[in-house]
Amino acid sequence: MKLFGIHRWAGLAIAAMILGAPLAAVAQNAAVNAPATNAAASNATNATNSATNTAAATPAAPANETTQTYPKDNNNAGDDAWMLTSSVLVLMMTIPGLALFYAGMVRKKNVLATIAQSFGATALITVLWMLIGYSLAFRGTGKYIGDLSYVFLAPLNLDINIANTDLAPTIPETTYMFFQMTFAIITPALIAGALADRMKYSAFLLFMGAWLLLVYCPIAHWVWGAHGWLGTNSNGGLGALDFAGGTVVHLNAGTAGLVTAIMLGKRKGLGTENFAPFNPAYAVIGASLLWVGWFGFNAGSAVEAHDGQAGMAAAATQIATAAATLAWMGMEWLIAKKPTVIGMASGAVAGLVAITPASGFVNPTGALIIGIAAGAVCYFAAVHLKKMLGFYDDALDCWGVHGIGGALGAILTGAFASNHINSSAKGWLIDGNFHQMILQFIDVGAVFVYCGVMTFVILAVLKYTMGIRVSEDVEVEGLDINLHGEVIQGG
Image (cartoon, rainbow, N blue to C red; front, side):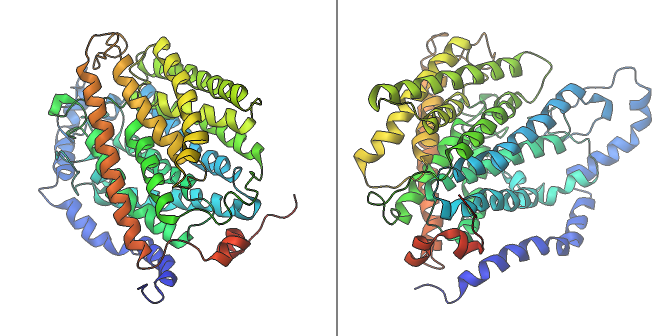
């Protein structure tokens, strides 16, 4: 039975979470100033030794600890500038990139509601990331989840030059936290492609918040955390390769999209009514912004700019995206006899998705092959497999492009990774390390199963309390006017 009136309180709950943050200031400050806090102890050490650090001809490199302060001049200015630029590029991928890409492919009556999903998710996830998300994903020494040492980003209140030396030793942690925030924003927002035209906005926002904390943060810690069980083997991890988010971002979001589409059910009128995109030009502009922003996504994941890794990741991204665009176009031309503009844009996104986990590990030839494979495979998955299976309505092909493309890219990373490109990787076809393929399949399987189960649990709770789907009347009339009280005027 649905809880009486709970849908009316969804917006108030979100507002209370944000407005209640200042009320925790006293507890936060007490925690920050506690003698046992790493940040406070580190700050005291920095103050005591400031004269020594100033006089030293060459400042000592930061110790290999989870948290360590160091003089401002130890920051690499080039690395910091590139990472700040990358962060803004990735933020642009969600707003306006993803917002326009998805909005252009829905019907006119749902354009504003679709944009509101990307915009609202950006605001909500930013606040949650600051409050607790970053701490859960990237702090602590646990294998499966982080700790609470960075709740409210408390240690950064005392030292803006503190560094996460395990993950980003040459830039301030403020920069690294911001960069990872933009990844945390776009990943849940991608799920909106599967649920378009039929989900309550209140349920959507609550789903975004819960999914971030219960699904994205643990998986990001598994793969990218310094001590995660799937990631780097230098700290006991399995050794799966995911340079910029093939499983953490794309397979994760795609799997959640598939589960959400199944639980919501198919859109009313699917197969009998005209579901043609309102404005394909919006979609192409959005895809173009995604393409440009993706250089921050992939090349930025090098977390530095002082050697060639970022440059190779950027080159691989461009090559694979262009190849996937041509491959999707070619498949359409061959089968449907006409290359559509929406198809070209979708092919580009498929290439961007598939090269993401491989971008810092493969050479240009590997990038070309991955791009071609992504264009062909994702075309088949989005256009034909969905119709063949028939049991789910993935409205804007979140699963077909991000889920399938992310899994494909993760597996092909194991095949084409080259030790000549990245000394931390040895792949199968170039370096003869078939074991890496096994690790990649484990990575894909673990993310798919965990994400699928947890997404189902979150949606089930929402479905049987407040409900997750709009009424039939609202769906027929349109989400824009009913959920937001606005409509697009004119043609």
